[in-house]
Image (cartoon, rainbow, N blue to C red; front, top):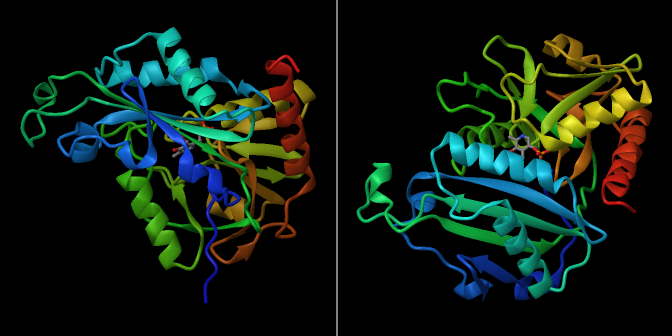
Length: 303
Ligand SMILES: Cc1ncc(COP(=O)(O)O)c(C=O)c1O
């Protein structure tokens, strides 16, 4: 039997059955936290979202998340219906209602709202946006390094659906993940339109070679906040870091590979397309970057 692992696995926490979910200004138990079947997010994936993490009372890199949320909303011409302080207040209200102080993950979602009729045209969304925050107790627990498979689904050009948009519609990434699972791996490694290694279906991707840290140019991947922080800490510590084109040949031969994302911070990669990467376990550079990232969060949170 294949033991599948995901980059977003966490410890079971029974408290998550009783969380309160923010829906358009109200805090509701899970069973009552619903949106309309006419909602443009449900119907068409027409919305944007952010994933945020709470560390010791502090929402890590909140300003960067708000920048990306408001930037994405502007790009899809969606009025969130509140300003940055309003979003911050909604997040803190949800946190307080759930009594969460650390190790929580928030998925903040804004869609174009309910439509008057079940068709695509955005003008059919006339009631204003739907704004939801699902906040869960969350301690990432990934039992082993992640195995990746290269998939045929590409990271596309910005003029189709810009892969930088954290849009509700993630079908390209979901198909990539399904293809990887069918190939016996956990998640999909996606190439860009030129065949260079780009990113995975849910996280950004890095390799380590002879003491250097490489990631893609950033042209076709999510502008991950964790990705940027890893680049920043490497630069600050004098670790050579490059945003560059590289191929699968460079990748199979890497000493280490790891993924980045708000949920799991840095997650080691064990195998790619059946090739063991380095020792197959978390490498010393990944460990070092993990520690530097933790220290950066403490520093940014004034701890
Ligand atoms: C496709 C993809 N790549 C990377 C990331 C990681 O981004 P971040 O580090 O901002 O969480 C995400 C998360 O939203 C994502 O959906």
